[in-house]
Image 1 (cartoon, rainbow, N blue to C red):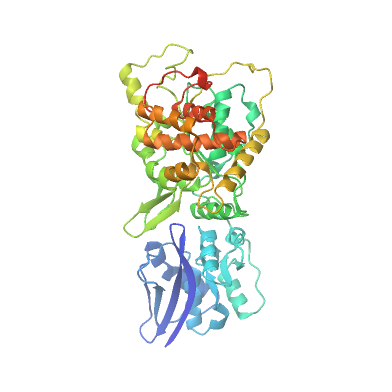
Image 2 (image 1 turned 90 degrees about the vertical axis):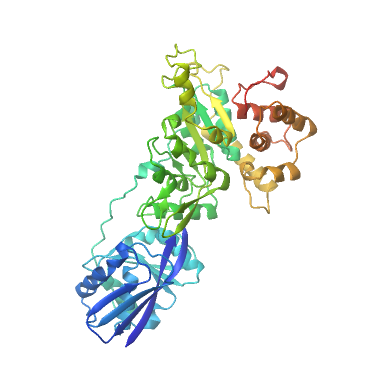
Length: 524
């Protein structure tokens, strides 16, 4: 009898688990058995491995072969265990020296001719192997770019099983034809960051102020107005105002994109905040994540540390839009399936854009609205109250004049982005040593206790709350927004004027000085 082991990685959500791949060759009729909760694609590895071993010039054992994947209670899904299974089998057969596989993790799918095909999630798997203390990992040649983004581990890219065996035997590595990249199932245009500048926007002083505050504090944003007023233009320019990702965030975002199949073959770390813009007809599973077996990340996880922009939000199915409630509060999403529960990070900035009614003319001077009161009520209810209550900034965007009213040129993205960076630096200094980075992330009770507003600002908000103009959640969100406006202004604490402006941004009222404040209706 002969027994050997290799190591691979299983992914449950974004969390990697080391999997011990054991091969046992015993006396008996030729048969290959695979155990350890494999899914269908993994169960087919028996046939793929047999053909790949034979076509690589090696002899497949004509005995009873048992392949075990441990821990046995962990569901295994995918075809990336193929190379580890093949090497474990050949080690048990005495073809490979067991010492050459020490501290080496192995991932890759085998073709019948012995080629090694690319897999999803190579970055997350490499990160898990590095954290587990492995010195080296073998990955498909097409996944080398993303695997080498992880520091502290040696990455070897292989095009075929023959090349891996040559490496382990210490002989000359045979040359192989470059592998052909598999077609991407997820369009890379989904993550396209628009190459636009803020100085393209004419007028829209209040809209520009809203996206600047949103970028500085990470606040959610709702833009509503008639078609052609500039809602999408403002939303697309929001991404350019945000600073580059930190090293840790960049690695985490890149791991999510690797698992979703969004990284290109010449992968580099995602250094810019992602801009994810799913169509309003997107399904619930595509937004949240899902799939058979172990779930894959959806659009909200791909937007982690970036922007999730939903244009024509009122046209999206209300149940699909309401699935954003829990991620907006917690910063992560859990996808429950019978096989496993996958947890993905989802701390994104939500940006919604919608028309005021089906015809788009309600509340504007662009024409007469043809929608009945019943149609108007139903349309506005498609974005539920709980979703709106979680959005910090709500702005009506009306068509601007063709000339800039103040006669001065509009500020460019670079100028506003510099102010946003300074505001974020102030937040980083204020929350140094805590788990929070931005004002929008700090729990309300802690913000009120450790960074209280002055008496005048508190009284202003308490009056609004007592009059029913603010909910309890809205109170905290106005406080966070007031701190962001103070950071943009370079003030030590929010003044009553900045707090009043924060309330106006929250309530969707036209920006006006506190002395011109008018009675408001409804709950903000």
